[in-house]
Length: 271
Ligand code: KIV
Image: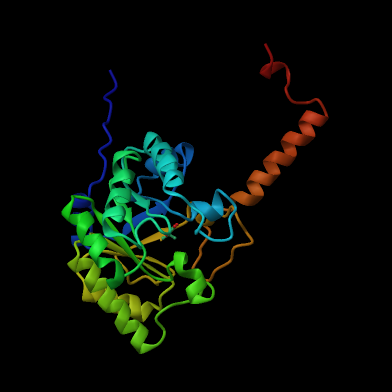
């Protein structure tokens, strides 16, 4: 009789252990059941149901139109496909920046209705009150500093953050404020490597980088980007670990050709 191996889901505790052991944490965005299964097979530590789904799933220019319902829907789908990663759900624009009690309720919905184990919020000191309410209520929170895409209009575009010393010092203070409010982890997006190092050294919770060099406690990438499914997106930080765009288009072209030429379906595919 073959022994069934039971997959155990990561927890904030096991993530903390890996961080303390000094092994980099692996995180990827994911939005659906099929990819979530593959992420489980590759045994990555964390999944983020990012509001980047506004861009890569919905085809929106920014993440701003994404709703709490969108994130809940995709979180549920991901959970059905993956039983091993710690699942973090993004809080969409305007679901946490205003009233702290409303922010707490919205975070609660991501755990209660979506099934997420943690939530992610963009911002530093200005959202520390909301983060504190969440962590007091037993909701693990991941922060997000640097290029925070929900503030794209305030930044005037997607560009590296914290190049000037005053902005760098503010980012370090923001990271400390998030840690103080009980956050268990902080994403650093589009930050110079030296600043990512300073932030990582200033706090004792893990930092997860995207475009922040190799000095952070782990890395995150958007799954379609790392799989090479959008060759028009070419930021410097991105490495494509596969070239699926060409593979997929090639397969679709072959399918079209065979259907039009009546060579598919063949006898072996027919009843
Ligand atoms: O929404 C997202 O995918 C993110 C990651 C890029 C960190 O916030």
